[in-house]
Amino acid sequence: MAEYFTGKRQVFDLPLVPQVSDFQRKFGAALCTIPFGETRSYGDLAKELSVPAQAIGQACGANPIAIIIPCHRVLGAANLGGFSGAGGVEGKVQLLRIEGAASLLI
Image (cartoon, rainbow, N blue to C red):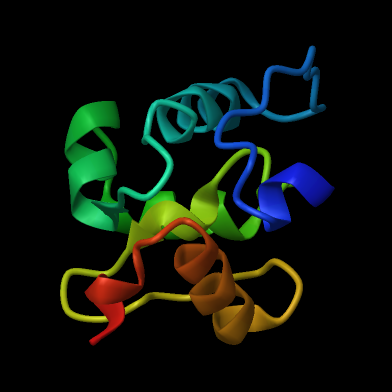
């Protein structure tokens, strides 16, 4: 984690086995394909997974490993959206800054 917070680690390659539903597993896999420093909208992921955008928001909120499964990279169409990880939306902003995605916030 220290490497991530200093910008030295961009990808986590860990043997994860979170106890989640099949949908949450597919959702987590989709999140892990979003590259460091890039974002997707709730709508983009909803289309990709053939579910309503609300389901994406709920899945983000239920993410048990918020940095390693990068739900902070999911944004609303016109705003940041929420963040259930440490620090709430401010925590999301800090993670996006670490990843160089801060230009999206201006």
